[in-house]
Image 1: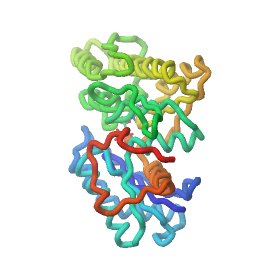
Image 2: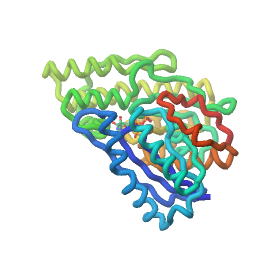
Image 3: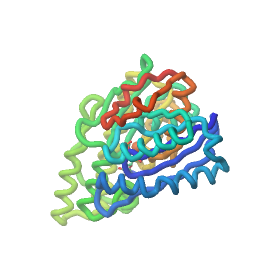
Length: 323
Ligand code: ATP
Ligand code: FE2
């Protein structure tokens, strides 16, 4: 069964094609504004690139629409204008080519691609991205949230710090590079409550320190990473002790960060637990959407066009995991 997935919840237009267990195409077009994402401009970017991206993915996989058995798209969560643009494109293709359609949850897609590539069974999941920071584990057919941010997502915190300090969006990778040159640790608010976290204090404090001109940007980036990633490692370790998982999966865009990977890998080694991260599939992509659509379809999930309305606040634990 061949599944085509369309990701377009915010900044990335991703088209992925998979054939049951094999990735056949992975096309990504990324909107990189100078300062922060403007939802309407991002949606415009998605629609301008839609046809080109679909054509490239078909070319990459040597297929055409008559070979496609399923069209999946990210139904939420995400930015309203982006979600509507993506859903409209997916519906048009489904109706025109008479191919079944499925709207999928973006966060569950981030999890499933990690489980698939890492051949994991039942991992504890640390999902860290722009809008989300959650610790999850499968229980009674749902990915239950055992801990999460009480305010902003960690990626959002990094991107906002970048906006205040002149780093182009997305700032995460730039902060990672600058942090490597940092030498001095500057104290920032370390806020952990059980398995929940808060990042807004770090943002305010780091921005104020930057404006005071008393600290170098490199040292601030280093300190932001050390503080926030230690918080993430601490809550993951606490959840691991409670839930007794044998595997830890790191996924979502911030999962690309090598320093975060290093801290978690070390913690997992101490607990004799397997650690996995899907590397370039941590970031938004169409392959994860194609994969989740396929899993849902094979488990018997079907949707009519009326069921494909977008869900801006689609929670991870709203989805029944039937596979
Ligand atoms: P979600 O809806 O899952 O929140 P998203 O729109 O945030 O998705 P992702 O691609 O999952 O998209 O994550 C993007 C985030 O990842 C951005 O905040 C970006 O700064 C951050 N990021 C990407 N690479 C790195 C890195 N190397 N280090 C830290 N953060 C990174
Ligand atoms: Fe994402």
